[in-house]
Length: 212
Length: 182
Image (cartoon, rainbow over the protein chains, first blue to last red):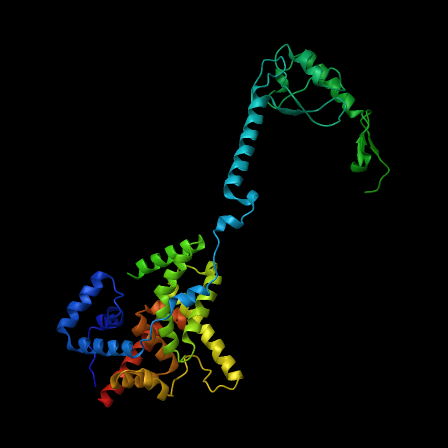
């Protein structure tokens, strides 16, 4: 019976060596080992005999290829709106439009208050309680006159931005603001369905008659 | 070297996906003979070319599911193995006498002997055919294709370590048989 080489690692590589599937360095190492090892040389001969015994006739490639499916380029079947370039263009347009809108708002003169900071955008209460409108901060002497023009119902209540504290207001502006708030409290809500209670001007709570 | 082959296969697949039909031809040229050899070593005697073609058709139709973490040839072998089993089941249903077991032992030497050129080859085939189905499959993939144990494990559905053991047990058995014959 054939004996085994004690160098198991090299012996394990013999089939790959026989098929030329080793990296060049390993191929050279195994080759030099075989030159001095009779066991590995004999095993290599046996492996080559096995490979030869299972060799087959060449396959007719052209017949196989003729039966293969054809593949169209990936781009051809993609709808126009789903093509990558179109998506990028649409995204860029959206970004540019958004940026332009922000710049336009920022560059808008803050009415005649001389303010242009983004801080001047704020949510302010209005005299009629009809919702929220953008307003300008009230600063300095001009506040009382100009802010009034933004109030569609209150007619004189100054609007106040987030960047302004009450201590910045003049006495006249504070009075005007308080008067405006009082009018808000006395206003009938447009949609009583959404509220359980309203606050009447006298300050006492009044049930709407609706069970919660 | 094996990495280079994978890179070549990956490039050819990419070209074929891009519409280059010549790349498909090159892929078939690279792997068709190995597939035919695998079919023969798995006991397929008839319509080997048809089986190879079916393997490629199935592979190209599902090429998008091929993951490059294994060699293309390994993937092709797994496809062919399923087709071989399908064919064996179909033949069995039709009454053709075949063994259904995976990698079934080939005992009918008469037709085979006509194909084998010399006595040594016949002796070797007898020795290989005496192995267990798993040992034979692992041994032949290692010897005729020079595959790594990891790739063999994917084809036969086993582990790398188990394949290594199967190979060395098979080698020992064959040496014993060949030695006794000599």
